[in-house]
Each structure stands twice: as structure tokens, then as C-alpha cells.
Length: 319
Image 1 (spheres, helix red, strand yellow):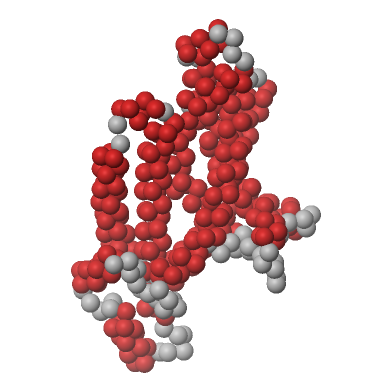
Image 2 (cartoon, rainbow, N blue to C red; image 1 turned 60 degrees about the vertical axis):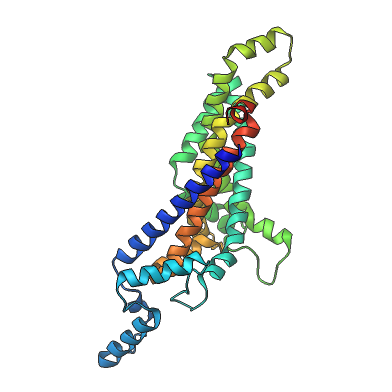
């Protein structure tokens, strides 16, 4: 087990370094010049050229690309992600300030999605080819097919504009910082993202449960007189391994959905910061955001591997 963990950690570090090199290269090769976004519109002619030259020297953009890379990479090795071109603040601090709201949104939505997907998938598997099965499958397909930005705008129009029962943006109301107000503002974005997560997971829970319920050990448990609850608990436990894999691999998709909803609901998370940085061509923040995503994905994959041993003792024995 320890040897396997060490191997996984080593490979994760290598992948992270490759992602870092790739992100720096892709962002720097992208069209557009961040300096153009920093020059005030009133500066023109020779003054503009002098102003631009001074900014390039200030941020080191006048150096060859490989010099910029090694300077940035050296900082990365000691945890320095550089400074934002837009406001001069440390990138690490900017991302850390936005990390909490994003984790709160994603974590709450993932929990809600699991609370919907697991019982919904089990019900669809037990009642296969019934009205309940068809209804659950249809709703999940529709939820996957309809874009999250459309559902977000539609929900704002219905619940915030027409009915006026829920807020349309932000984490808190004006002058409010209490938990109740936070939960009130979380309702729409969390429900929409949780519904999207549940829609993608229900199919896996259903197929996994159907496969387990058709196996011989389930028939043996039934023959011994076990009740439906015990049979379902045995089958659900054994169907969790593929679900754990799907959850780990769906984290990037969940984050992508969170980025969209953060924009729609003005949620002050990392996604909103990344979109603003993309508009301003803020290279350090964009690269830092990409590295944060890489860490999240690698960590989720590592956690999924560790959970295999918890869910299924056969995996732990094999390792």
C-alpha cells in the first residue's frame, strides 16, 4: 500500500511539472499583449511607446521567452506564482482569497448531487423499465442536455425577477455577513450545479446497481432470507468503486460548471477571477489558476485510488 502511494505521488509530481511547463508555453503563445491592456487610453504617440517599454521592463516581458520561463519556474519551485499584472498583488494570495467560495460552491453541489444521484440511481435500477426508471432517466438526460448558463439565466428570471423569492447574485446581501444570508444566496447556484452533477452520476449508479443485482452472491443472499435493505446495501457497496472513479474524473467538469455559474450569479470564486484575468490577459493569474486546477485533479485521482482500498478489501489485499 505504501509503495503504491509513493509511486502515485511521484507520478503526480511529474505530471504537475509537465502541466506547469505546458501552461506557461500555451499562455505565452496565445495572441494578444497584456501590456496593451495596461496603457491608459489618454497616453498616445511617443509617450505611449515609452510607457509600453517601461512596463515591459518592469514585468520582465522584454526578456527572451526562455529567460522568462526559468525565472517563473524558479519562483514556482519555492511557491511564488508571481504578481498580477492588473493590480500588482501576489497571485497566490489572489487565488487563495477566491478558493474558499469556489470550494464551498463545488462541495455543497457535489454533496447535493450525491444525495440525489445515489437514491435516484438505486430506485431506477430496482424499478428498471418502470415509470420511475423512465422518469429518472429522462430528467437526467434533459439536465445534461440543457446548458448550465441557460438554466442559470432561466432560474434567475423565474425565482429572482418574477417571483422574487431568491437572490440573483453574490454571496451576501448588502450589509449582511451571517450564515443564514449565505445559505439563502447559495440556493440557486448550488441547486443548479448539484442537479447537473446528479444527472451525470445517476446513470453510473443505475448501471452499477443493475450489474451487481444480477450477480450470484446477491441470489445467495436472497436465498438465505435476507431482506431487501440488506441486499441493496451489499450491492450498493460493491458498486461504489466505479462511482468513486467517476466522481474523481468529473471534478474538472464540476469546476467548469462552477466557473460558468460563478459568472452568472456573480459568485466571488476562482472562476470569476479567471474570466476577468483572461479578459485582461493577466498571464500570472491565468497560469496560477491552471496550476490550482491541476493540483485539484491530481489530488482527486490520488484520493480515488486510496478510496478503492477502503471500499473494496480485495484492492487493498492486491496492493
